[in-house]
Length: 175
Image 1 (cartoon, rainbow, N blue to C red):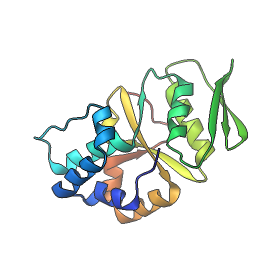
Image 2 (image 1 turned 45 degrees about the vertical axis):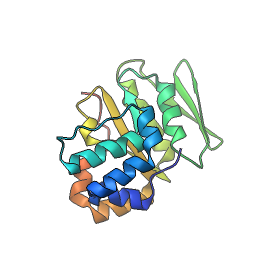
Image 3 (image 1 turned 180 degrees about the horizontal axis):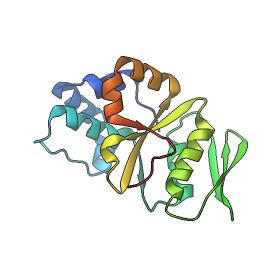
Image 4 (image 1 turned 135 degrees about the vertical axis):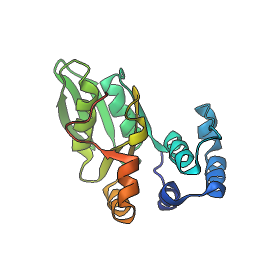
């Protein structure tokens, strides 16, 4: 799967209705696969992140299997190799040929242990952030971008970026 382009990220923060329609047209197949429909009563600044997340987010349900979370994130990294296997202690993740272990508690807390563990593996090149609008749901949506792009977005749109995305930290979990 491909990552959003710089112009699509600009659209996410500065887009208008015409650009939204063009984005929808460009990603019609993906949106139709998700059976996506937009509530017309939403303001344009609310519609754009919703549509964008349908195209580019990794969606994790609170009950998702941990190895599937790693697979879903791995699919979003176009030039990386990610494999995962379950062990009696958690997960063994092979990232670009190097084996890493993520210890799990075999409890409901494991979803974010897995997410933080995977974030740690990719941190030199990529960063995962949560779409803030999905936080109070039982299904969280994440965006993975190269670190360079997150740094540019933080510098260019500091307030809006903090409003739209949440950094993955030790406190984050399903509510």
